[in-house]
Image (cartoon, rainbow over all chains, first blue to last red):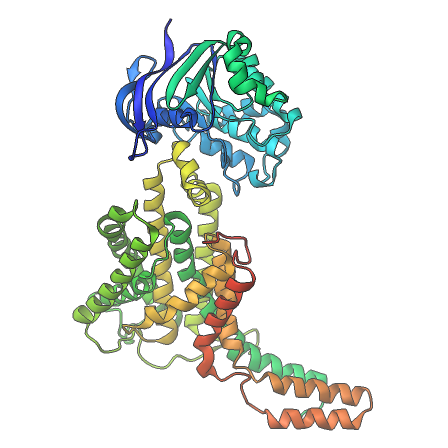
Length: 239
Length: 354
């Protein structure tokens, strides 16, 4: 299988003690891959390692087979990795349209046409294009954040807990949007707290714990796994 | 002696507008231009740049040197009156390049190496830079006061003599409007301008969006330098003198303007600058005279001789007395700043709170 994004035995942290103690992940073309695990498992940190925000001590990050370990963030984005942080993922004082323009910073050519594509994908945003992103509802902000990330036509999209803070209604819509984006040909790596729902849309999933791989399997297998259920799903029966 | 509302307005208008309002607006323009640089550095680089006033002072001296070099300081030149007054602005063009170079150099060698350290370290570095520039200028230009254009400036009549403006005031007002318009266009419609607002919003998000933050920082210094040159040259034109502490004396009102408008908000810096400038000038207006006149008029209108004579007494007692002595001018900006920090720390335009 040719992986779009691959993390091989990744160890590292934010300069101090290591947080990742050997993480292996891969995202294949057309896949939705979900990473779950308890707080402090290193899920978000693994994502930041891809972006070049971490000090890597061992292991490698490969993008379409090319080693990008330790590449600074602006270049990683330029190579086609897009990232939506969990919080603070829109420029609140910029309008919706300006947010999208900023998303295209590393690929300004064709940005205009791409913005129109985004309005087609997220029709709600078209009507609010001149509004400040900070004035939108949580769900709409999340749409702006995703559209902004899609502006570079990414090789892979990283989503850090996209449903955090959303109401159950919006959560369902968001997972549907994730599916739609994936169906349009964008592989997705997603960290999620709402494990059950997330595994429902995932092709494959990883369970991390203490900065290490714990389990992996198809979304359905993990959702059905007893231990995984006990660890994450039981406590979140509502999720 | 006072008699009708029309003469009240006439004396109020003439005196108030020409002696107080216009000088307040002109001072406000200078504060606004300086505060733009301070608020941009605060918003994008996240530190209070204490050296900004000194950069204004340095820019004025560089402009002066260009004028001396090209023989532009003499009044013997056969040029229209307004053109002579505008000579410092011509000389300011090369000064912009020099000042930008200095600011980028200072950032490269003094601030950039400290960028990952706690903010207070960079603030202290800028404090040191302030002292260095202020010590350096008298070494190069000498300790004595200088002037762009010697001689007495005379006000000209506008609108049939209703408004009297000095040439320098006309140039400062028009110049500020043009610079602010250009700057607003830049921030709103250009790619780099939008990126500046994005970085000011969230440097972390800007970074993971792929925005070249160093390029944005460079743009910030260039614009800050441009506005500092304008503010410094306008200040020297307005007071008709260049001296070593001119920038330092602007520092507090400029910070007050930036805080009043909201840190990181250029619009706020402009509005804040105008408010501080106006407030500093208007406190010295004999407002009790006006109060007396109003009560005298009300007393007459209500056929109440007691009220009218009381109003007249207030008027007589306060004739020509400033509401607050101009000696307290410097305290006004400070009072406004402290008041805002207590009541509304985010400022008028919802800036950052540190």
